[in-house]
Image (cartoon, one colour):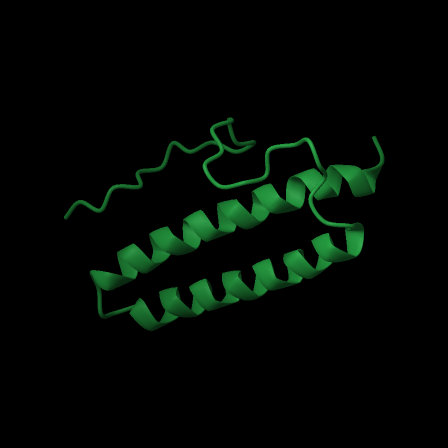
Length: 89
């Protein structure tokens, strides 16, 4: 498989993963005042990253057909998720 084809599979996954983290950041920002602006700035930057990735994906020909690239993926990620996502005080 060519590198460009691999990217047509990976980029949609990366974009979804960024969106999931941005949503999590927004939830955490709701509970604080100190640092809230910086967290929301990070969300804006993640949105810009996804815009750039979307443009790259278009240039490459869009998502590769036959590969799952929609929301609700259930496969394992390539990095550990042992950190706590709960918002406990």
